Length: 289
Image 1 (cartoon, helix red, strand yellow):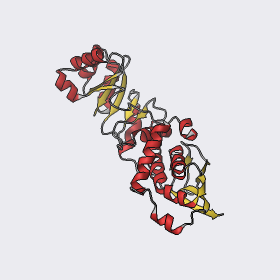
Image 2: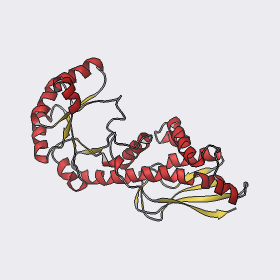
Image 3: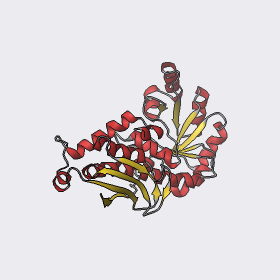
Image 4: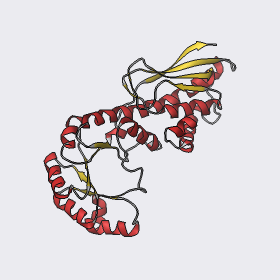
């Protein structure tokens, strides 16, 4: 798990996720019936993780953890690239040596996690590249796969994006329903600040007037929802010196630079984690020994 910790991931969280994913494949008896039936217990092999498409790699430490936990520590995992590397179809990403049964038992779980994370990183890199030079950064959201938030948000970082908030506990986000329930932006903000004085607060706004009200109440981070580039520029002119601004809603990669040039600091894109296709990666056995 040293590889996992070095990547800034929580080894306990990775272990729990990997064990849960393996359990889905191995069932109540912990058995890979095909590998047990076809491969002698003492056979060992070397396998390679190979990119089947161009993209950005993320999740190699997690894939390594899958092989390690499956084999009880009897496999070796040697990465040839680091997370965040742009790779081409046919590139070898890592070499894994160990008991053949364990290599094949771990294969799909390792690839599911690695392909998913790499897909998110690849998608994020496209947004990061589109925003280059604008001064804006792409953010993720809480629209993540249940149970895989830590991995998908890690992949966003690897791809060149920034994490927004990890959950409902670390940042208070006052949205339209909170405002409706509290009666006003100001009332909602004051209640959060009173109850949780040390928690960062972000306020969702849809007009210049709401932005001004939120900043007047004390907010220093605004989520500008479904605003046109022209309206965003108005908000930047009105409160830009007093609050960080995030554009969100109906953003497209084709118009990323246009939105980034309005003066906002962030563009938040739920699609980074809820709509990224996987990056196709395969496991190939190379030699028997």
